Length: 185
Image (cartoon, rainbow, N blue to C red):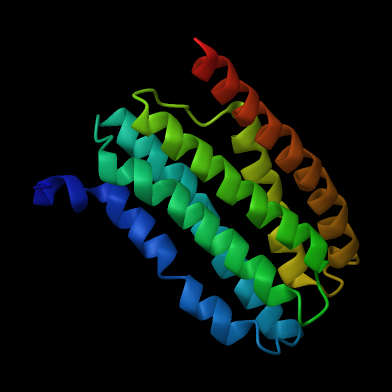
């Protein structure tokens, strides 16, 4: 049985709050105008910042838990992938990038699950973290969408999205290579 303290520590609670942003994405991304696009981007950015906060707190106060190892990446994937999926029908992001990104995430999760069942853990790679950071910046800019302070937010978001996409492919290959090398031992 999982101890109540392990589930409801501060870092895990922050991850759960981050997950609670997902329903707001559904509501606000249905047909956002300029004002709601900016509000949504701010909400998304704040939720993204809490991703760093929960990890920092977990490490600093030795509150790393099995539940946290599950919740943190789940929250990342839910918020980023939901936002990307919801931006497809409003023309802010290409569907093929979203599809390949989600397929990569599923493959990496599968690889990590298989590795775990075989008794070894594949840690999140720096490439995977860089991919997530690039995705967060790209999605935030794509949510803003409209020109902001004279900057073409959509163009900026697309450039960062392509960088994130390359990191997505590269980090996915990195996970596979780590798993393959470990499995051969």
